[in-house]
Length: 423
Image (cartoon, rainbow, N blue to C red):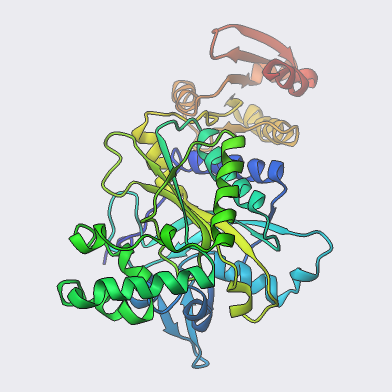
């Protein structure tokens, strides 16, 4: 019987995984500069967490969650997104009591959604996200948006588009909600079943429908910006002013609604305009979620964050023809000839590795020519050749693979010589 990888998942093989490592390193360094600290949460949580936080009218909850019953009869779900778990941990570990506020966190790890697999979209995918909890300052909104944009720009992406919107506070959304119901209700039968079920529960979610996005009712739907109260409007204007001061270009899109129920006030998405990137252009999304902490059992605590897919980021880099400066190859390959030389090579390899170098040797008893070919395939910067004669004279031949230059080096100086040469 042959086994194949489950649909919607992928193996990330050597040669490709180095790109992932580079992107992850950039993300971690960026968070260090912005003073966000890493948090790691379980891959699965109690299902109720996502029902309460993500919202039972969302596509994620209705159609995409991997939910199962464990041996104790508890309903468990593989996490479909990261914010709910981070907020749950924030509440459970009483991080709202930390003296340093706001609490600024980031995460990176696999998420799971039962979606139709397509280019750049998988059922198991990796998200990088940040959350800032404990501040109502519009400056933190601008910081989070700027951090997201900097993540892409620091990797060389240029064909980006940032759109922002305000979803308003509770009062504003209540007024807008009624206007949406009044707008859609007379012709709701023309829309899909999902839209019909959302009319009374969460009419704003109708605007996010993929099936009916081109329906005329969508184009003429009331804009949330027309229903913002003075406080919400002032907040949104302040966010825009900060982004402008930071040099972050953006467009206001009154149709932008995020796919999760917990968002309010600032909402944003970053898209790729690269030619050939695909029909789904969104790279990153986020926004403010005042009220989510209380929903999960914590005290009143404002929050804002974003999440991006590493897979889609890599796809955007490919679309723009950007190559990452990932390190390729090893520092040194040791070719050993003769039994005594083979025994000595084991020690030399270990000494070089202890000195912090990446080193390989032959383990298949191949001829010299085959060993040199192996060194070439591994892109070795140096090849050291040790035979029984060299061993008797306590020397080793070192070849610079870039220049072809060969040097005879005393064995007792070999490790330091290679280390210095690489520097």
